[in-house]
Image 1 (tube, helix red, strand yellow):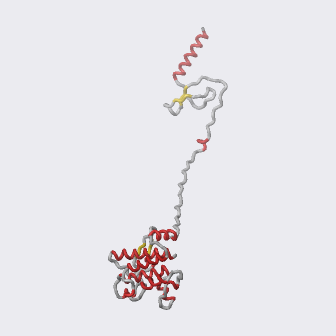
Image 2 (cartoon, helix red, strand yellow):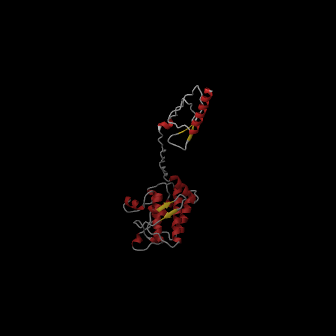
Length: 248
């Protein structure tokens, strides 16, 4: 992490610890895995309860000085690039300054971090304000202004991109209706007759109520038909009259 971003984040971590102490709560053992930063730059600390805390936690309760030790461990990893427990292993049990692993930081950062990680609680800063003053001095020396939005900017820049996988679009199949071929084929039209014949009225044998007017000539229509009784009687009277006239 660049020095300017590390200093801004260190100050935000100090503010988060101050918020816990303002509520009368000591954190106890915590490390870098206990830190989370949201998209607005808000820093949250939760106790880990694991190893790596102040030595006095083995036989006593957490307090301000033990929390300063844990915060010093987070600062060591923040500025040095590895945990102080790993640094102790690499150096054979003697904690080197974080500049051993990150030569870009100066002696002032080394002094602040090593004082916070002192095995003797009485040699650590006894107030959080002392650490705050050290961080402000470091920011002034590097031409930085403490700004919480700088942490949010750094987080948004380095946060891994979120891959959004679109849900597959399910398209319902279009319902198809089987239509008989006969319904799609136009019915053949009768050929027009050269001769025109008078149209008559007829009805279907199997439906006494339905009366259909035929548009076909006498020589063109087919099928069983029943002539209307009155029409037949009228035709008979006319034929009889024609016969009587012929006899006279």
